[in-house]
Amino acid sequence: MIRVSLSEWITWLQQHERTVLTSFLALSLFLGLYVASERKTSRRERSRLDHLRYSLELYSAAAGPLMREVNRIGDSPNEQELLSDKLLACRAAPYVTADLLTQIGAYIHDQDPTRLSLLQKTLERESEHLIEERETLLNGMERPGWGLSFWQQIRPIIPFLFALALFFCLCWLFQLIEISRMATANSGLTLLNSWTSFASVLFSLIVLYPALMGGRRRTEGSALLWTLSIFIALLGMLHTINLELAPYILGAQVLLFLSGFTLAGSKPRKSRPYVGHYVQDKENPLLIERTDEEPRIE
Image 1 (cartoon, helix red, strand yellow):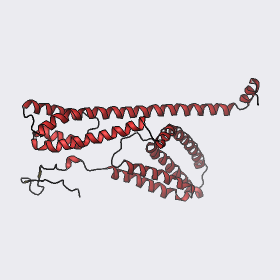
Image 2 (cartoon, helix red, strand yellow):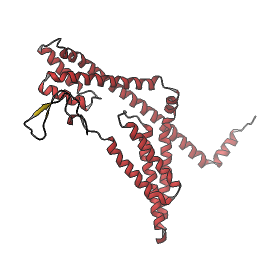
Image 3 (cartoon, rainbow, N blue to C red):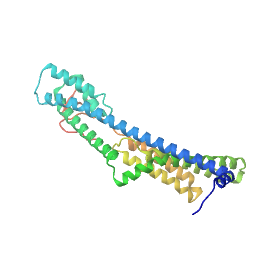
Image 4 (spheres, rainbow, N blue to C red):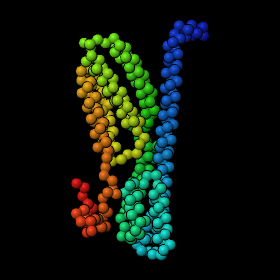
């Protein structure tokens, strides 16, 4: 059995004072970032759960009066006033969509009963979507699978790894500044490639971090944008092959990043007509026609 006395420990610490101090600071930074990231993720999930619950409460409160009005169970002014109040309250739901907002606004504006059927279908569809999202969130928090549980344990480590990567980038930056001071005319192209490579790696880290940390609500294009972020970050690894490829790699990364704005964009629902309602003729504003089918988006 190996025994080390206290005096020997003190002597070893004095001989490796810088190493011990650096290790202690790194461990403190790691633990601090891990705990902060874990708490931030937990607060974000609880906040999403509260938003989902509040939105579902408002939708459920409006579903009853809306169903009675659609089925003509109660046609009194009090019922119509109650329905209007509940629908207006739905506009304050944290996760209300632009489609539902527009339909509620249109009904409140003209009180057209023919809008209620479509409004009821939209409200039911949005409620089912939020219920599914709530169940997925609860399962991830309370009953995570093997892979998800492992990911939840290593995800708080990512901020420390990115802090370490940024530290190396800072050292790289100081090195590039020093090299630039001593650069000659013949080394101009190599210096340009080095700076371009540094900008590409830093850009990769900036794009990769939010993709790995997540925490945002999933939309239709979330998976595609996540894949695009990972691909942009992987392009930064090609600098290890040849430094002369740096300008082309950075250009490809910027083009892919700009393409994300196009992929994330969508035509707003309020710019499209509703099923079963009148739309205005663009050629003759005085003429209107009724459409009974969902318009196609060219």
